Amino acid sequence: MNNSEFHCEMKNSGRMSFAAIWIIFVFMGLYLSKISKIQIVGLADEWKTGDWLINYADGFVRRGLLGEIALFFNSLWGCDLLWTVVNVKILLYTVIVVFFLLLSLRMKIGAVDLVLVLAPWGFMFDLNDPQSTGRKEIVLLAVFIFYVYLQTFHDHRKDTAFYRRWEFWFMIAIFPFLTLVHEGLTFFFHFFLLHLVFKKKVLSKNDLISFLIPYIASIFMLILIYLYFKGDAHTANSICLELQSRGVDASVCAGAISSLGSYEFQITTDYAKAFVLPIVGTIAVLMCYGSWIFPENFRRCFLMLSLVSLLPTLPLYIMAADWGRWIHIWGVLMFVSIYSNKPFKKLNLSGWSLSLKMFAIVVTSFYLFSWKIPHMLWKTDLSNVRFYYPQDLCGWMKALL
Image (cartoon, rainbow, N blue to C red; front, side, top):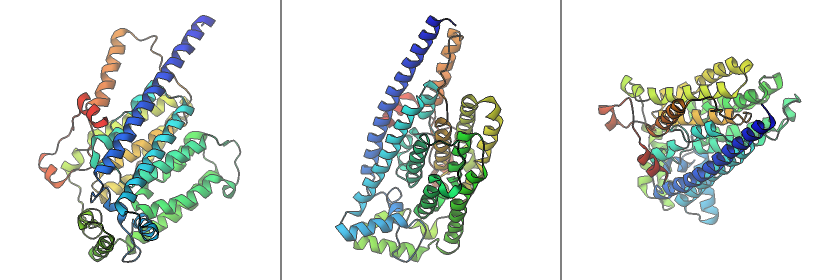
């Protein structure tokens, strides 16, 4: 390659990166605007808001930490409980958007990365199914993206003792907090370690210890919560009475709060069938993406670790019906873990024929705009379970705008 060809390739690469950054900024701005409107419209939703208002009115109970904090500020300053929850959620979404954009600037987002940002299991998951938005996993996503962004500034060449690492103290503070926010988040903590392995391509003893101490403490908390603090109908009633005494309508208690004492879920073949395509469409594409990003000598390890990362999440699919949410969380965490450790790789189309380029555009468009993931199936949906939940470009644009 002569100097003029090299200069031309670098110029085209710079243009592509600039275009991708421009697109991602516009998309994330529209995403934040729409997701904020959804939270305001669902101000008194029994699931999207009710889960955040579970508190310790009847004593310690799972998922009650944020609700108790909201009650504290209500007592201290008279803050409206519903608007406090909505404002916190919008703040968390803002953290997700801002630090993801900052990460994109550092990583020099390209065309392939952009496709995955727009994928149905990613940010569009929330917009395609508004009932899935504003759930407590946004706390985990905000914390993880912030953590990953901080890691881009850290030099990992020195293997310091675990107690001298900022990651250790970060995780030892945040893991118990997230467990008390929602015990289901604990099943995704391994991504904090997985990201580090993807970054260093090796795992040292101090890396493992700095993760295992806070992780084991969180697992211990999780077991205690499930054994002694799951809550029951009496707990739900006490929480609801406390909220009503503070001006919250009783209808807010009809979803997440009442489920503390009565929610049951059983897996059926039909239910699992509805999520085969989302699971395959998420895992397969992210594995191909990682195989393209990482060097050949790490590829086999990456594929093995990706499959292993699914195992800790399996209990969620047994205990709760929100399979779409679990796919979404795994997909976003895995994408961010890969994306934050990539070199800038340009998709070189110079050797592609016109027909091959057109085929790639058609396949990409089909992947982005032709399907979506429901966050769960309601009992009324089980009589007409579908293998495929269609979307189209008009529906995609309507969801975003």
